[in-house]
Image 1: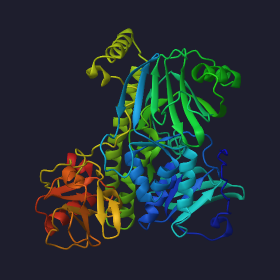
Image 2: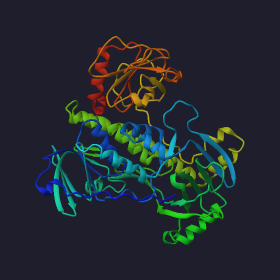
Image 3: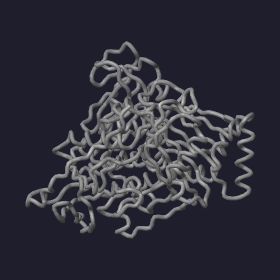
Image 4: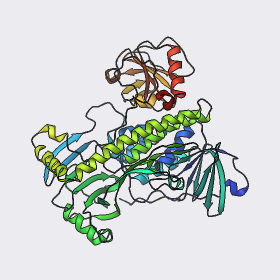
Length: 544
């Protein structure tokens, strides 16, 4: 199979250097990685123009982020690239845990049917970036992609941000109502602002390798997550294996704390480690890196006109696939709120809810990531004793298997404690929870719940349609099989929608798919009040 060919994107002289261009851009996005591109597409779908600024013009080299979780895939579906990612990616939901040569246990992340997207797919970051660039190019009137435009300075002027840039044609500046920093874990924006990035840096070193192999390294089915504690083939603490498209396998080797990085990077030493793992199977090294990771976050993600999204705001260890997925959840949370502010539907205080909700989400990710790291690499004799005894017991005792932590895999957080009081009725799905998918049948054929929810507040009634109309909310009815279908009425042919949401309840979903309110008898007044509360909610005011 041919190797991936990294596409290079054209540099175009910025209009400002030609004496034209917008006086003030609505949004400037710094960074054209998966998060910055997703942010631009999300805003474009809501009618908000942005300029995307990146100092490079090639997608990320090496697979980097590879594990994309179900909720992120649902968000990517809304952005228009989910199906393409699913088709190209390696689908998996089973994880296997080994101690030395023995398989201790396995787990299934999505045992039930009736979901459009699987628990996870593995897909190299360069594919994701390519798909997002090509999707962004479908919005020429709303997304201005500027490659080889390096941001070298910015200044928040109160009512806008002044951004200074360098290009192959020389320096220039532009203005934007808001600047979104999607410029990664080493964020130059964060560094210029001298913002503390507090957390814990772990001393452990990991050798990360992408290897091309025509055959599975262990035979059988390896479209799964395989994790080893103290494997016999490796003298470190752990090893991890994932299969990717194009016969590429991601392998992580934990190194000894005193490992010489220069020596470990030598191809002959990498080959020695790989041969100890896979034997005589032929392989080709595709990419490698050595990393030491940090779990840290900004205290605040919103600094007046400068907003931080993704790794610029928070970083975690790679175990659990919470980094890239967490950034996608940031985009999902911020997009509709910033659009509402720029359209004059809400004041800037609404952005404080992005700060509070995603600070909560990133703190939860950091907690889970730190716990996984401490289990994998115990920091004290007592932690090691606990880890070793859990692994021993797990062979025979099911309760011990739940204690094994090789990375609690990414799931979306609940926002139940961060939403305004909407006088909701009791529900099957918790207030603040993200949408739970279910298969449906519409007038145009098979669909699903995530596919019919758009970028607006939407009331989904499971049973019959409420007796009112509203311009503020889309209305969808999920009815039983045999009901006459139209553009707003869908049939629950599997029974899973009613099982998951409860018959006779109506759910108000925010534009990002989180449950904003639940009603047994919704009416126009309550719906309008709930939407107003969500658009004009300020967490600090509520706390006071």
